[in-house]
Amino acid sequence: MELSRDLSRQEVSSVDQRLGVVMLARQFYPLTGGYQNQALRLAQELVARGVRVYVVTQRQGALSPHEVYRDIPIYRVPVFRSGYLASFSFLASSFLWMVKNREKFQIIHAQRSSSGLIAGLIGFVLRKKVLYKLTRGDEIGKKGFQTTVLGRVKVQCLTRTVDRLVAITREIEADLKRLGIPPQQITSIPNGIQLGDRTQAYDRAHIQLEMGWTPQISVVTFIGRLVFEKGLDWLLEVWQRVVQQHPQGRLLIIGEGSERTALGARAQVLGIADTVVFLGQQADVFRFLAITDVFVLPSRQEGISNALLEAMSQALPVVVADDALGGNREVVDDHKDGYVVRFGETEACVNVLLMLLQNPALRREMGERAKQKLEEKFSLKSVADSYYHLYEQLTAPQ
Image (cartoon, rainbow, N blue to C red):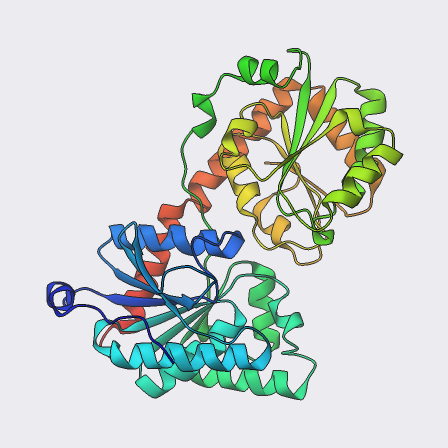
């Protein structure tokens, strides 16, 4: 198979003394999504700390086999398109790249389950330390780790070949322990975001005028993929009852996905189409967070949502569903920095949204507490520091 070009000798000689980390991910920039964005942001923070980060990912379409983005070398190795051949070819291509460049790194940092298994096998052969981050609460269930013979074999493989598994939520940590992963192999590190008052650069009144709204309009915003797991079908039912009592409310839905057409049709049937605005994918979500009064995330299943963290970082009160995977509960403390409502309990969700929309003082108080929590627990700086210390721990002389 064709392989991405190796690092130049000049590059190697100038960086030999620094810690080297290979981030292994099936998808990476410019492809976007929750775990891809987290990986990119973390890589940038680590580079700023002097870590050499090399991203090995699979070839996508016409993207270049190699590029450097914000001081991060990205190597896109060739793979077959689907099925087991895709996983095997990614293993083979990644292995060959790492063999040729094995002097440049000490750690393989894998994102998601398939990359975790591949990283473990490569690390075992090359005698490299391996870190595997579980990026979704349902990874364990989806991969059959608990329910199938092959899944149990995978667990044994991970236990023997991966030095540290990173859980982004308490529920993932508990799931790993139930699988029999030794506690000393598990580290809890949440997702993080870059902080800053990014909505302050926008004029709310001007944006509302552009939207054709009066200053009396109040705004509830959702940001994410328009898919079944996000619970938007339920949110529309909730919103129908909200605007009956709060007719000046508007619901912004930002994102794209397979449910877009069905959701638009549902809004028509419910008679709320004139109060729901589908904005599609937006490059700058903070422009719309600047006109938001309440952020809502009605997920059936959720990891740790970047959009939720971003909203809280801008001192917005949030209303989230008590999802099946526990991601929202990991971030929001009910009645402290937001509200957690059991999924499907429409009346409870309606009451919480109305209470916030009709009480500016409560919104400000809860939003400030949300922002304070983000600064203390979910800043990208603190998350990157945690990974850096973990790298140091893994590579320390025994």
